Length: 195
Ligand code: 2AM
Image 1 (cartoon, rainbow, N blue to C red):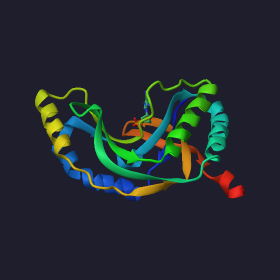
Image 2 (image 1 turned 30 degrees about the vertical axis):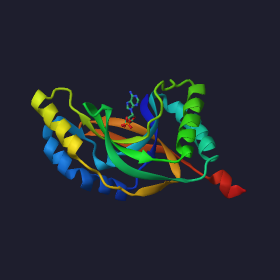
Image 3 (image 1 turned 180 degrees about the horizontal axis):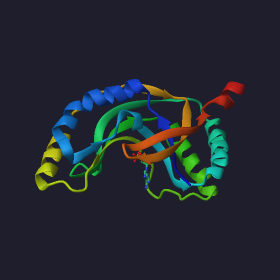
Image 4 (image 1 turned 60 degrees about the vertical axis):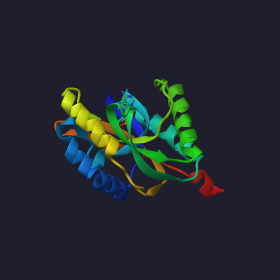
């Protein structure tokens, strides 16, 4: 079995801009947060969980079929936020401004993989880039300090990028952390290119 998810890759220049603008926050929050390494920042569209290697081909074909019906689109990257709320930060993320196509494509992927037998996500899609996860065991002091650091942090415009492909990734948990590898890349817009 392999752990898999469907996601959009983020260009390196955007990830570098995120790193530059969050460097002071990362320093201030110290041990309280496990920051995501640059390589691992991505926009998750669908978490599949454990899948059998034999299902990769069908998932890839389905992904390509959905992708081919959408033209490439732009996503703007900005702002800092937390799940479930700034008062109780567990996941720290960078927010995105995306056109309706992103939500439509995510919904199509969700319903297609549900037909293949994967669980349907009950929460509404909320596009974000996870950049940090707050550790379980932090002191009250660390928690207060973290909230203050997050509240005072202002993130400028981080640029925008063009989405041209959606990837099926596998995730391997290694001693150094998760390693994500693209198993398949579905290109957007091939349908448009043909007509
Ligand atoms: P997120 O960081 O955008 O929330 C790969 O593991 C990605 O799949 C993670 O970065 C996470 O996306 C998402 N993910 C991991 N475990 C998940 C779960 N149990 N339910 C939903 N999404 C999950």
